[in-house]
Each structure stands twice: as C-alpha cells, then as structure tokens.
Length: 407
Image 1: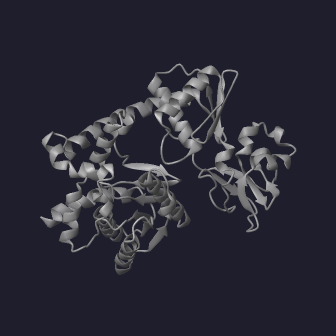
Image 2 (image 1 turned 90 degrees about the vertical axis):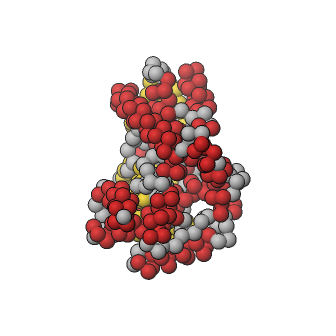
Image 3 (image 1 turned 180 degrees about the horizontal axis):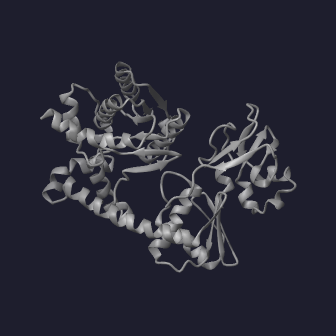
C-alpha cells in the first residue's frame, strides 16, 4: 500500500525532473505541502543523481516565521540538501499584504536562483489550491483565464516555476509525511478568517454538499485550461501576423480588426513582456488602453508607454518605471537585458535617461525613438556615461535581450 501510494506522488515529481538537465530547487515554507514536495524531490534527485537545492522566504510577517525557516534549514542539513533562507521585511508592506508577500517571494526566489545558476524552481501548490483559486476567480467575475486556475508551470523574473503536485490532494501529502515520519508546521494564517482563502477552507464541508468539491472544481479548471490553450494558440498566430518586435519594443497596427478577446490577449502578452510584474493588467486598464488607441491618444499603462503615430502603435518601457533600477554590469537588468563588455566593479547599469542622451550626441543615428532610448540599459560610472548600446554609444559594449516574447 505504501509503495503504491508513494509511487502516485513521485510520478509527477519525476516528470518535473525529466525536463531539467542539471540542478533545480524547491521553494519550502515549512508547511505540509512544500515539505512533502521537498521530501519527494530529494528522493527523485538521489535516484537520478541530480543536484537539488532548497530555498525559504521569511516574510517577517509572523514571529514564528524565523523558527520555521530554521526548521527547514535543519531538515535540509540532515539530508545534505543545500538551503538558503531569504528575508523580506513584510512589516513595511501596505495594501494587499498577501499579494505583496507573494510578489516579493517570487522576486526573491528568482534572484537567488539565477545567482545560483538555477533556472527551474518547484513550488508545492496542490489540487486544493487549484479549487480555491477557481472559487476566488468565480467571485471576481473571471473569464476563461481566471477559471483555468493555477498554471502548472510559468515564468517569473527569468525563472521557470513548476507545480508538479497541482493535481494532488493536500490530505494525501500529509498522509505521506506521516508515513515517513516527517514533521511540518501549519501556518496559522491558513486558518485566519480575515482572509478569503481560509474562509473558503472553513466552508469546504458545505461546498462539498453543494457539489462544489475539490474534484468538481479542478475539472472546471482543467476544461478552462484547454479552452485557454486554444485561445493562446490563435493569439500566437495573430501576433506573428501583426506584431513586429524591435529590440525591447513591440509595434502593431492601430486597428487590429480581430475578435475582442484575441486582441485583449495580444495586448496583455505585450504589456506583460515589456512591463513585467507578476500579474496581468486589469480588464479596466485594458479597456482604457483600447479606448486611447482607437482615439489615437498616447497612453501609459502597466509601466509601459504606448504611442500612436500614423496608424501604428509602439509599446516601450516607461522610463519612470526603470529610472531607479541599478545593478552590476554582470547582472540581469530589468529582468530582460544582459550587458556584455569590459566589466568593472566601478561600473553599474541603469536607464539611459535624459542625462545619458545628452552624453550620446549621435543617438538619432540609431533609429530608435527617444522614449525607447530613455528606458534602455546603459553602463555608468557615477554620472559619466560609459556605454549605451541601443543608442550606438560605446563600441566595447553590447546588449542582449534574454527573454523573448511569448504568448
């Protein structure tokens, strides 16, 4: 019985490893879902002879969090798994604290993973999380994309995140841990009914009686995933037909004359690629954008600048969104750009801006619009411009766009 039950849980983890040629990592909070994933992944890694690391984010939102991270570190040390705890000061967050914590977690994990040469991280979401997501999205009036629930895999900040246990029940993972004598901690916020997800969990018996079981909701999500995949397929075809990508910008017709949902998907994918961020723009923001484009009025949305000229629309990064982004010349800048040249610790990468343009007298010869160049990566030494590859300044340096557009 134990071998059969374990095999069912190990199978999707083996599948996740089969898509990775070298090392990967597991994001572990200390809760049952992620600890079970780590234990399963460790078994698979040992069997396959692959490297495995673990990472924990301490949000600083609860006094117990530090001890929970230490518990994960001790578990990893006992099994010889390299582990790192990352810290974020969640006490400074405002507004939707849970959303801010989630965004910070993905950003921290991605930065850590890339620094370790890891581009694939496993996270421990389950079928229960999938069902809760469908209910949350239903309450928000979501369409196909929202009701499709969780993505089994996704890109965040240059790193692939996979959810191998997205079809596995939470109780099955806790049974697994109990069989193997592995302890876990229960985050008290999971029972805090000030938040919507814990209220949905508390309502689970009533939802089951109404036919809204986890199994039924995951079937809804699966059907919507198939519908979303079909829509994305046709969206990619229309992107290939209508959109031109010019370095980090996108250029498309002012009037696409396409079904509204396909047009919306094109815009959402372009804005996500250029503007970044873990979440897509809201429908209200897309509606406002569509109205501005139809009227031929320039617009700013999702940290992108949209200009309309002679029937063509150009989407570029908004300078104000990157004006304070600074990194070393060997680091990834604005999650898309990599600089190559004579690296030096005295140099840094930040946006070219108006000061940089003033030091690039031949920038017009590059053929790039001024807004594009303002938000482009440049190499600086204090206030002295060293190189601005997109502006044609500094022949020793080049720039590479490392994250191509995908729908």
